[in-house]
Image (cartoon, rainbow, N blue to C red; front, side, top):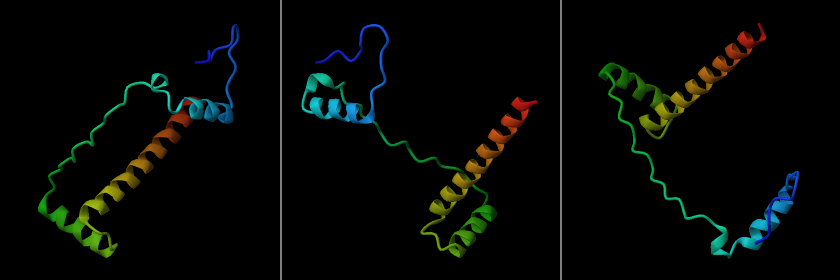
Amino acid sequence: MADMKAKGKSRVLSKKEIDRIVVAQADEDSAWEKPVHVRRAKAASVPLPSELSARAAFFARLHREASVEDWLRRIIQERIDLEEAAFAGLKRELSAK
C-alpha cells in the first residue's frame, strides 16, 4: 500500500486521485476497516390530546398525505428547518454587533 503522506508538507488529493486510490484498493480487504453495523432508530411515540390528533388527521387528509404520521413528519421537519434558519440569522446578527 502506498504512503498517502508526502514527507514534509502533505498535499490535498483531488477527487479523481481519491477515486483512483479507492478503485485500486476496492478488492483489498486489508485496506478497509471493519464493517460498521447500524440499526434503525426505534420510532418515537408522542402522545397527543385527542382534539389535536383529530385536527392533524383533518389536515393530513386535506393535503392528501398518505398517513397522519407522514404529514406530521413533514410538518415537523419544515418547522425545524424554519427554527434553524431563524436561529442562524439571530446568531449572525449577534456576532455582527
